Each structure stands twice: as C-alpha cells, then as structure tokens.
Image (cartoon, rainbow, N blue to C red; front, side):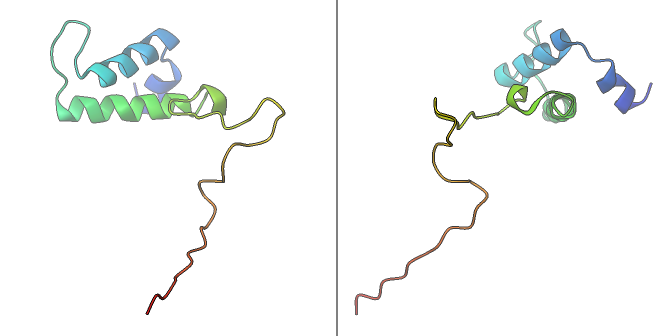
Length: 87
C-alpha cells in the first residue's frame, strides 16, 4: 500500500491517536516516539488534515469576531517599518 493510500484510508480515530502521540511524545503503550517516528506522524497528520475543512485542521485559529469581522491583522500581510532617527 502506498503512502497516499494509507492517508486516504486513515480513520478519524487513528488521526486523533497520532496527534495525541505527537503531543505526549509517546505511544499509548508508553513507549517513547523516536525523532523519525515523530516526524512521520506529523507528516501523516498534516496530509490527513488537507482533506478536512480549514476550520477543522490542526493548528487552525479562528480569527472572526461575533459580527464576522476578523481579529487583528493578516499574518501574511507585509508590515510597514518606521525608522526613527534620534540623532
């Protein structure tokens, strides 16, 4: 089975279990995740998340107010720097 097929056949329970293992740094059995296992789990979680609506993805931050407006500025927008010469 190819990696893409594994991700496509992943259940929500397995996805949640992988996220939990990443958070805790260990498997449900208590065995510590190696660096390679942690990276593989993260890649699988990110790949699975691509099939979910944006608001259900890992790390999603809802920036909308009750009236539908956005909180704060766009994190991807360029910031203007003001240089003040005090000399």
